[in-house]
Length: 156
Image (cartoon, rainbow, N blue to C red; front, top):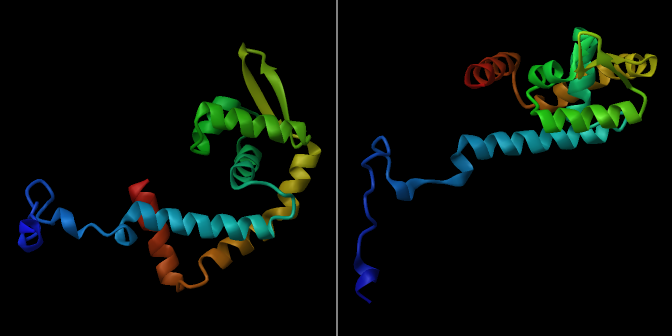
């Protein structure tokens, strides 16, 4: 019974003056980013015509800008680790959207290009991708959208 009357410990040391007991998950940046991402992915999934995932779309759009490009470089440019980009590229190649070939300078590396079907898929979906971003950001003013982008780039 003695614990019922004990005050919560003030654990402000090492927490920048905040109490450890004041941690609210709903206020944490990681949680908020995850919720925003889940909402965006739901919008993306419901609107994207080609039944592409967000990672597949990112790979296609970035490859269009960089091609020919090594698989490793495409992974770097799209913030995907080696295993993830390999899986993404394998699935896109299976759908005949991406062509893979050994790098003439280093046969251990793969060089990627979009197929004609891959180019067409990107072209068909660019306006859809813009609409998806618009829907994701619909609650924000133009100034808030610019600020959000700036802040996310700053912490990335």
